[in-house]
Image (tube, rainbow, N blue to C red):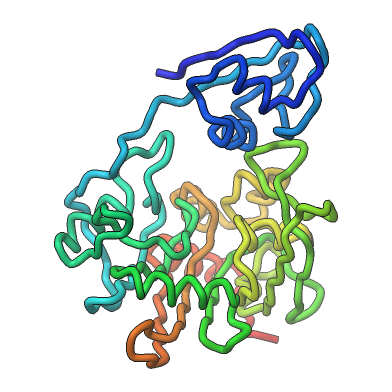
Length: 330
């Protein structure tokens, strides 16, 4: 059950400092995280900045989510394993599986499954046996993901992901079904990405100083008339929702993306009944992490994995091809 904290500012001061003074049992870092998550309102409006100045008499409300168990519990959840040794494990994640426990998803996650699968083979990171999540995929995104099983592997893989492939070690490619057809066969999207000021649960292209540099290389793989396209995206950076934000930015949001493609709901009418049914069955964005390459953290060997489209996306592709007659890469 969510707890609600409420207080009235008596003097002008920073929002996070006021909250710590008003509710000393909660840390400042915790309040800052809650503010970033949109759980804090001032005068009924979401507070977007922990450093915002309060005015005397303003009301502040905090919705405290229920506490999550200190450590995830092992759960017997089937895993599609592409590769495993004593250092790393590569998973082909299905759409619908959350990677890490969080508020609203305390169990049934990939981490819970890994704890059950790996057992004593996991190293003691910080004194607790747990897998090293190096990168993540959105809940409704399927595809390849590597997890570290030792401290050394975690550090080595984290360095590769931090380099974003500039050292030639890391490769990440995604297949995305998008609305419409780009006016050229390939391109590069380079922008800043930061939290949306209109909706704290979304990311957005931004020029603010705190926006993070993001680069997506894309090329058209298949065109389905004028209704939709299959795009291959290669990431040069790995920002939250990067592909979804970038493709929406150039006017071609992902099919099934209710967050960044809500304005294209009427475009469904341009699909055949079979394609509409296939899209409806996805229950999320049509995005798949198809290729993952990295340098093995122990041997130094270059590893590369490819995962075919899962059944739902494969069915969508077949229906789109049937409706239009597919055109290969221009």
